[in-house]
Image (cartoon, rainbow, N blue to C red; front, side, top):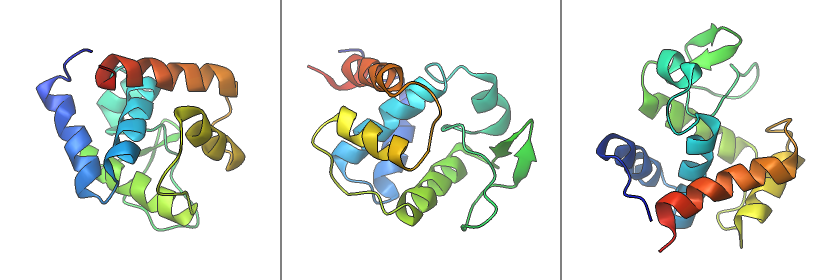
Length: 133
């Protein structure tokens, strides 16, 4: 198990503070690590966007608008809050039996366009990296 960098650990605790349970937070943190190439992507660095979110036209959002085709946020916590708004608007479950089941739910709601097996493998990689013992 890799220790979570102190800065990134705050993202995990921010997820918990936004009302996600510990398993949701682990899956979502792993998803964010995958989406941002372990928190190094330009989208993350320039837009404070942990999830590759687009600026929504309909639902409530914390996004300030669109920059380079994606939502941008005042802070990372605003990105997390926006994901929470998306998650609740999409009526996701509070518990999934596995990362694969969670990824199936994301795909069913057209959250991502990538191959589901590759997306799931990427999220699983970061889950194993940060949370497996």
